[in-house]
Image (cartoon, rainbow over all chains, first blue to last red; front, top):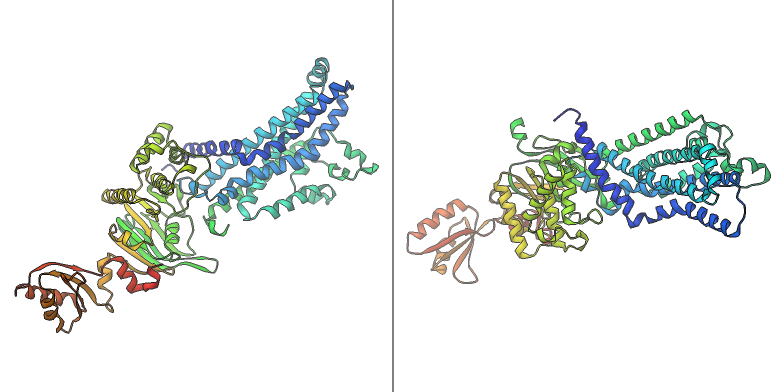
Length: 285
Length: 317
């Protein structure tokens, strides 16, 4: 056998992806992920319809800030966070609970190749679901405006750049949270407590010392968001959730992107190490 | 051990496996040759642990395992030559029988056409062609058992590990499956079969490994194992035309412990401490007017051997 048969590994990873992407995208058990992902798009669409019916004039700046708030406070922290819990944690832990992981372990597939195939399929599915939702949210949000205003905003204003930035942040969120929850699913038999701990850690990130803030995913994602949200400026006005949106010393774009990729690499490498030692022991789960 | 021998055997060297404080198997030393080898023992005796160890699904706490010279922690090489039909009765969601085997073959890196051809051939071999397009969720227990068997043989392995493979099969399919095992063994495969139904493995095994509470208590050809159990006299059933006369002629020899007329009154059941001398005696008796139709050991089956070694209670669990 070739020392490093990359061609075979890629073929095997694709075979894993074929099974996993289908399972993730079309599973009834994953319906709640779609609900979580697409609920902002539905809310924006309903709001636009309401605005049209009532004939209220729209304000692009106001809607842009509104989107930024929902994106940071709900979409990143809840929708993508829990969506990635559902998608990535199930890649291995779900199979252990279903007692079907041995299907893969009985094939002549290197466990790191299996891990890569599963992670890529999770990343593909999550990016597709949450990335599509961001595009739809934008469409629903600005669809209310007349075509001239829309063209002006998207072609001559910040519209397209913002959309690209939000899609990029979404993909990086899937990468970062995905890798973290993949590792959590491989490491813990009961991932509820670590998930809750991570959720709290991400939520209190803004009030942590500067050094600790950097040990998170949300810090870098917030740094990459193109629009500051009203919470930043309304904290001193008594907004109790204002602290969540704070990011007084954001990372640079390059630092944020490199840090998130590095985090993902470390988490996936750690998962690979754990997976090589993993035994099939359904009885104790 | 000689490397050439290791290349053709499944070897356990001082292997132990503990699940926390719970013993799986302890200090196992085995060298399994090609042919049908049965792992025999009650539930919890360590059969599945041994199978999981040789397929790398669990790792030994101590010792070394080699399957045809391949370490079980190298799945990339191991499962090119090993097929494992597990006892787990669970399947990836939503798959048909065909998809189950086909997708497994795709994981080997085979192209679509080759995977499809191999999958259909394996499914045909377990007589499940008609149900191949149906979802496994709708299969009976016996059909699920057979589709797992198809998965384990689809890549033409050299070693086939089968955990309770006859569970849930009806008598007809059971007979067909046993015939399939024999055909595979005749092709030169190693077949490792576990069962807690002793008479089931008795008819198909070339050799047995008897397990109790995580220990190997005996291994080898069943007759050989039986001969080594000195404390229990051998039982021999002699069919003849004059059972009463035969019983009286053999009974006064000191190596004959018991001579009893068989229930159907057409034979004598003899217990002897020295089978060789008894057979010589029988030759002499045959020349003196008693017509002997058949002579057959009555307790060199797996059940008897297991009872002698482990005890009646365990063997009937």
